[in-house]
Length: 444
Image (tube, rainbow, N blue to C red; front, side, top):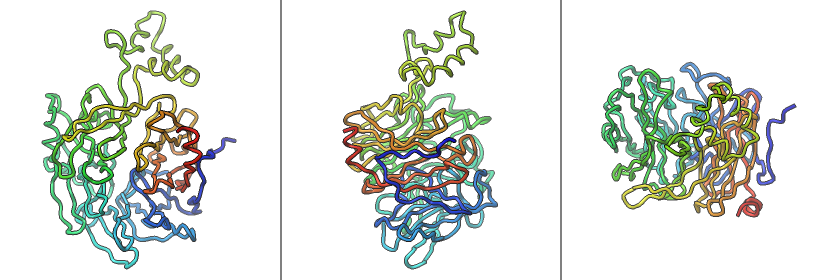
């Protein structure tokens, strides 16, 4: 019988959600589910599992007391998805407050709940990334996201926000203290940066805001597609100062696919990247192979499939016609990015979600399921170029609307790691303690 979870000696499991009648998960990888003293673990909870999000199903928002193991429900939300939950996050201010997205009167909003006092208040717009002081959110129009490929909610559907472009779309700053919002960068400015004529007939939207460690800059994705198929899209990666100024586009985007990124430091970040593997005349190696009369398309596909586990990584990338890796960038004073380190190889051949230790040296990341059905959890040393697999977990819901990424979430002190996992028919969260002495001995 296939084992569901393999945990290495580099991790010590401390807590695992094992509710008999519910499933728990947190969501995205660049937020810390642990509160400041590591006594509470924030989570989303749902009774049904393995189903697509729908407006009839609400989730519980709450936390586990890590000393007693007891679940504490704070509220509910009808605005959620499997990848990001309801964007619930701790706010680093007094009172152990949390913030999460929900809806009210056919409008997406956010709610701030103070755990100590029990007080609640509504923010008139949904949140995304939270600044380090906890006072502001840099966010997108999540009501527009419903009409695009972007992660969205089923609770609010406004037809007027459909179309090629929502004119009022953009990147916004929401003041969580004064309950106000202003536009930092409008969608028109974003589209017309390195504008191409074919943009005119495309559908455009924004995704994945991520703020740097000190809150001085943020990254985000601009995606666009044919209006007939938003699941076949192109991606551009932007960087800007926290006030929206010094907007800069990562170059080479027409020949590159960008997915998930993480801040290494205030001026350095890494992004998972797909690029063509070029040979003479700029043609992919697989195109040269298919030119041979003896190699049919069917035979070629079988060759790739058969060789995927036995050929070296560099051979497989040439056959596939593309390279996959984490590309690191450094920003100058005007946010112009220049490529630096590149992390590639067998462990990084499949997309993942990177985050970094406070000193920027170690990258924690995961992978989508390999062909054996397991997702990998890994750590990479940016100085030595070495890496080690920390764990392998079965991906029960792969290919399902409820698919569960590990989304490794590193605690602010770097000692603990939380992952989401559906190694069986339910979503779980596992809290690990990292043994950095063993990790450094292996790769540093």
